[in-house]
Image 1 (cartoon, rainbow, N blue to C red):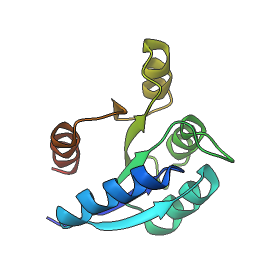
Image 2: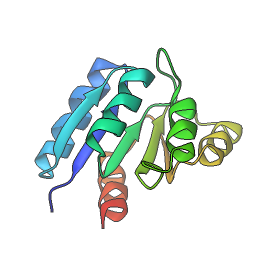
Image 3: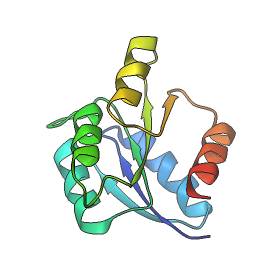
Length: 121
């Protein structure tokens, strides 16, 4: 099952490992390195899933998530927030902004892949 997955993260090492995992799963991968690029890619490409970092330059992941949910053309796109911000208030903010799931870094590769499969099913 091939889907388009957008990785929106400004940390090169995270992007490399996520890209490798998603391609190994057979997905088409797009990369955005800041919030503005992420929004642009979401509007242009309409990915099946966005792996979204909370802290990025230009627009935060929270702002990107809110913008996606506010736009009727793209509001149904699945968003998995993937972030080092692990406090309960951060999780509540991410889910409140409209994220479908919230995973904290460092993350278990196996658990992340299970979550991605579940969200794309």
